[in-house]
Image 1: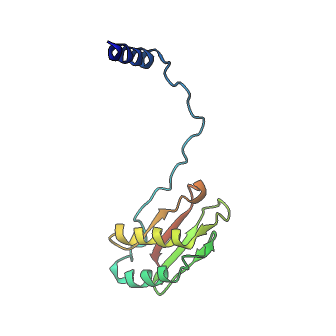
Image 2 (image 1 turned 90 degrees about the vertical axis):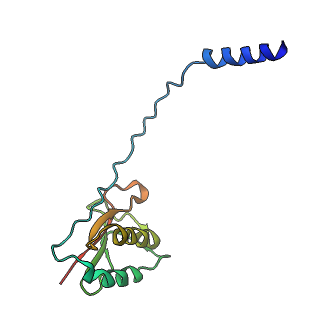
Image 3 (image 1 turned 180 degrees about the vertical axis):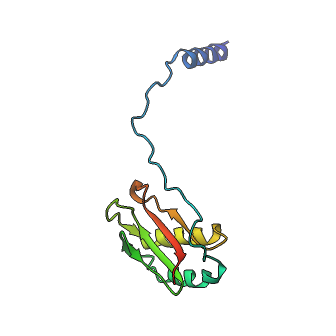
Length: 129
């Protein structure tokens, strides 16, 4: 009988407690629109150059807007589209560029780093002559 009263008390407290009506005033930051767009000359032929460009990034360093790591025909840049310096770790740049290489069949693209909530921050791999 005691077990019945415990279960009944739990049921009453669960249904009688007010719903959580608190709503967060924080709105999510729009993420960068990842894409695999680039020059019409983008192809696997620049993949090795892009891998070398990625290898030039120091994973332990901190970089900011307009940091470039281009090699051969691969243009590689970290950019913020006017959002200021927006420091980012080299490891984040490496990881983002590796994602472009693994996701974009023609090697080129731009993917967001979303560091510090920056919705404009991104790494781009593209063809350069």
